[in-house]
Image (tube, rainbow, N blue to C red; front, side):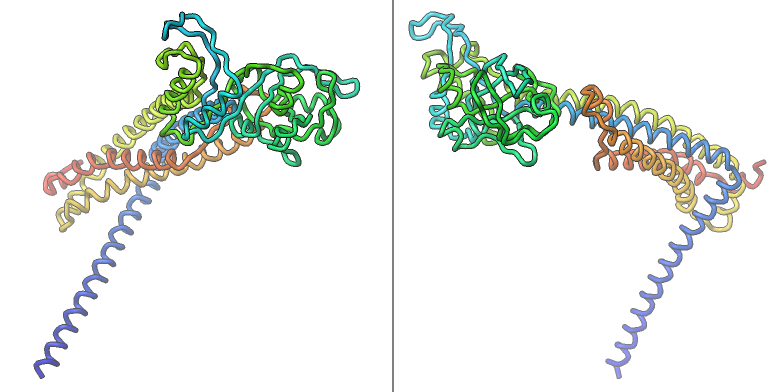
Length: 445
């Protein structure tokens, strides 16, 4: 019997707990429903005021999102324009010694060869891609009666990755067999291919290059590029380095392209290049004048910092615009508190707690901010997507202007700002409302 009684007591207790939980849940729903009904009622009573307040938040949100979106697009475009000229690599040129070393005078000229590439690969295991570049300006190209000149380079197959000169569909870059067999094959930039073959596909066709026939094996896919070495890649002709050496017989390379395995070892690879080549050509590894180096890795960091700075500045301008709208929301909420002083006093007199009063006004401020903000976010998103869809290939300047990007960090930052503004705009008026004396408020006119 005692066991049955205990079991019955536990069952009754569990039922009470479940009932209490359902009651609390129902009370919570009722409170939020009441808050929403009061908010909608206030909107109906003060349509103009509510519209102007929401419009201010909407306009501020549009300003924030658009400025951040265009800033993000500018940053990405500048970074891509640099990387499309060189994929996180070192472009190493010979230089002139600036210091006396081991009895040798300063001012000695350092000129690099393709054999240096093999030495670098053997001595620096952190290098994963490399290529020489034999440059030759004003190379003549002819197809029938069409003639043009271009900057030509003799390179290795890894050059495609290093310079992002990826082949278009149905074509290829030069390969290891081309290099080994010294084939007369040609890879063309997309613009020069259009000039030579205006009405037909270039792949498989023959081009007369400096009086010698070459077969076109590939055409570069179109890319955006705002940094270049001896002109843009779209106007460039590429042949195997071995073929160029066999025809023209150069002894020295124009430069070497060196790609570290990853960015964490880039600094050590750079210092090792000076050490290895310094030992070969007998110059001080600390003599930076002995080698001229285009450091795409450092350039990328600088471009990223500049782009981030511009984006932060533009974002702050938008945030200040949104904060002004938040001040407007706070002022409106103070007016609402003043207008509803008697109502607040009655609620407190019949037993409403202060937290209910605070919740009411914070809820209204948050709802105004989020409603206006989401409308602004939706409108700004549509503008960004629409502008981003505008073709910009024919105008490089438009690549920067008409290339906004909406990213999740931007969206989350905007929503977080709206929540913060809603809380700040609602909590001070709410605390003032909760501090109303019920007796004095009933006398308020």
